[in-house]
Amino acid sequence: MGENVIFDQNTREPDPNTPPAQEVQPGTEGGGGGEAPPASDDPPTDEASYETSDETLSSRIATILANRPLKKILIGLGILIVIIIIIFLIIPKKPAVKNVTLVWWGLWEDNATMQPLIDEFQKQNPNIKIEYTKQDPNNYRDTLLTRMNNGTGPDILRYHNTWVPTFASILAPLPNDVISVEDFKKIYYPAIQKDLLSNGAIYGVPLGADSLALFVNTDLLKAAGVSVPKDWNQFIDAAKKMTVKDKDTSKIKTSGAGLGTYGNIMHAPDIVSIMFLQQGVDQRKIDTASDDLKAALTFYTSFAKGNDATWDNSLDNSQLAFAKGDLAMYFGFSWDIFAIEQLKTNNKLNYEIHPVPNLTGGKSITVASYWAEGVSAKSPNQKEALAFMKYLTQKDTLQKLYTQSSKTRAFGEPYPRVDMADELKSNTLVYPFVAQLENAGSSFFVSNTHDGDTGLNKRANSYLENTINAIINDNSSPDSEVPKLQEGVKKVLLENGIQ
Image (cartoon, rainbow, N blue to C red; front, side, top):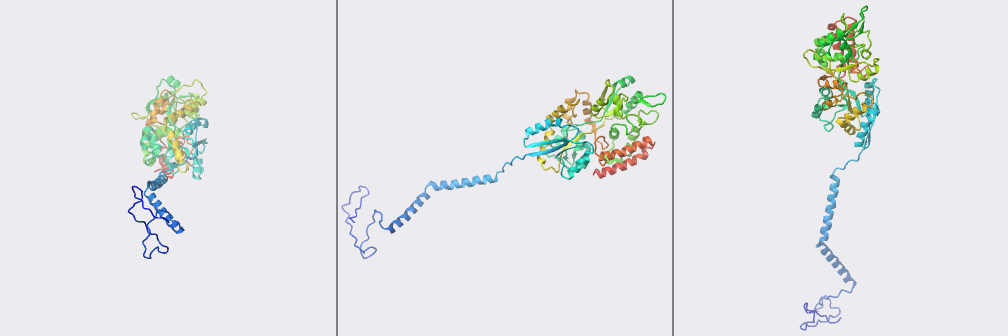
């Protein structure tokens, strides 16, 4: 090799004061007393030197990378990815929308009437389909219970207001997001509150409500010169004046009032219930109300006993008699109007609807009878069924139902909401039934529930029927018959879990 030249860092010219390097003799590396050769900037030429140089370069690169921002960026990126994964895992995922079909069992209303309500709900809830079926009212309660118990019952069911105690195990309570207890008490009439609220839970909502009212033939009242009776004393006087009997046989030709017997009186148990309610009878404690029961039954049967009788067992059913113009005063519910219109033989039949008579100086208490919709406790789709129940509580829904049902008859189901009563004021046929609901009560003695031979209503009514028939037909006394009524009804109540 030539002489090694050392460059000055500033001038890069040879330094004249630097002595020339001695030439290294072969074999003197690493010892032998000679001076070590100066470091050279030239790259090593042998293989071992290349390996050493590569390792040094790698270490330098690693050192450079460690001191540069790239490592920090990679670390930050890794932390960000971990955070995203954690957030993805802990944030609740929105559940997939489940498509369900709800089966709804109803009574009275046809599918065509209910379908617009269903369509509107399905429009708002496209994942929920409602299948409405109008059931046969005959033995409806028994059929419903059988299907519910074997797991083939509906998701949403219609039931009578008196069935709540016996249906408690198959009905799901309504949560606050459907309707709160506070709102329920504001919206619905007292009788509905008492019936459908149990132990602080709401078990259904009604689509309509009805009460027993007094139908009067205005032509017969006018002919007899009497006014619509306000209390029972006035009622007795009016009934006597309007009763017309055959002069020879004393057989009743035109009756002043349809009550007193059982078999040919439409709504006989309901009429007796009015008297029980006005006497203050607590039917759940019927065994403690002997005197009030006797007083009510004595008064009721008096219309079919003695020379002043205004009714007897030989006459037509009271509804038919009123439709024919042979009965001046008839007790009925709003839906009786439809039947009377079909039965009447005289197109000039003129009648009005008025509140039932009251005890002198007392409130005009009547009996309420209605149907409610509830959710099955066994439904696999309770969440969706409860959403439908909330829809059924709304004013718009009830208005739509009333409008639809009015397309096929004179009027729809009277509104069950207190704040909707004024909407019916202009309808002189339906409003009287609604106006009484504020002072209406419920009774286990109620007609037309079609609850079968084993049902609460049918069995309670049977004991009442036996009592009335014994007083009228066998000339038995209320004193001897009332204890039998109390014993029988108490047994029925206990078997249905009512104490």
